[in-house]
Image 1 (cartoon, rainbow over the protein chains, first blue to last red):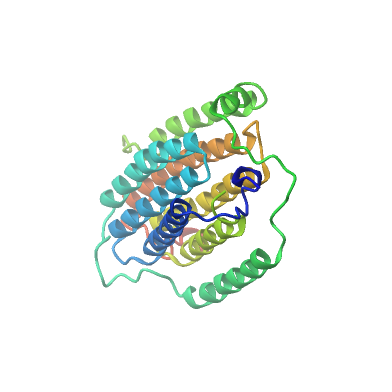
Image 2 (cartoon, rainbow over the protein chains, first blue to last red):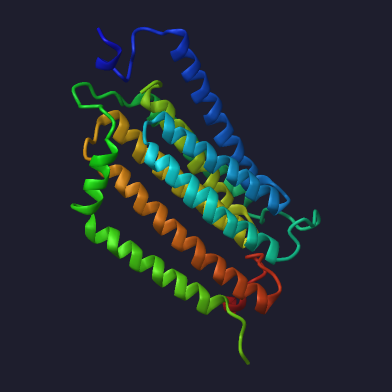
Length: 181
Length: 103
C-alpha cells in the first residue's frame, strides 16, 4: 500500500518521516509555550514577543498541513502587521514593566478551574472520537483552486472584507486622533 | 498528513484554552486583545487541519481562514484605537480600573 493512499496512517516510517514528525511536535510545543508566555508574562512586551512565537508556530503548522499560502499570509498579516500594531500599543501605554502591577485579576482561580474543565472535556472528546474518515479525497487544495474559489464562490465576502477593512481604518483614525478641543 | 488529525486538534485546543484563560484573567486590555488573537488562531488551525485531513479540493476552508485573518486584523485595529483613546482619558488600561458605567 502506497503512503499516499493512506495519508492519515502511513504504514512505513522512514527516517525522513520520523524527522518530520519530530519537527511537528517541536513546533507544536513552541506554539503552546509562546501562548503560555502571552497569557502569563508580567512584562507586557514579553507577552507580545510570546505572541510572536505562537503566531510564527501556527504559520509553520500551516506549512505542515500543506497550506503554504495561508502560512505566508499568517506571517505577513499577523507577525508583520498585527503584532507591530500591538507592540506600538504596548509601548504607547504606561506601566507595562512595573512588577508591582498584578498581571491577573481576582478571577484567576475561577478561570483556572474553567479552563481546566474545558481542557479535560476537549481531551476526552479528542482522544475518543473517531477522527479518521477513510474514503475521502485528501489531496491538499492547489493554489490555483484557492484563487478560483476566492474570486467566484466567495466573491461577495471577499469584497465585504475590503469594505470592513476600510471602515476599520477610518474608524480607528477617528477614534484615536487627538481631541481638537 | 504526517501526524494523526487528533494531535493537531490537541494543539488547537491548547491554544484555545490558553487564550480563554488569558482573556478571562488579564488585567491589561492589550493582554486581553492578544489572548483573543490566540483564540482566533486556534479556530483557524482547526479549519486548516480538518480541510487537510478530510479533503477540500476547492480550498474553501482556506478562504474562510483568510477571511478570519482579515476580520481579526480589523478587530485588532479598532480595539487598539479604543485602548489608546481610553488611555488618553483615564491614564490606565487596566480593565478592572475602568468602571465608569458601573454606577
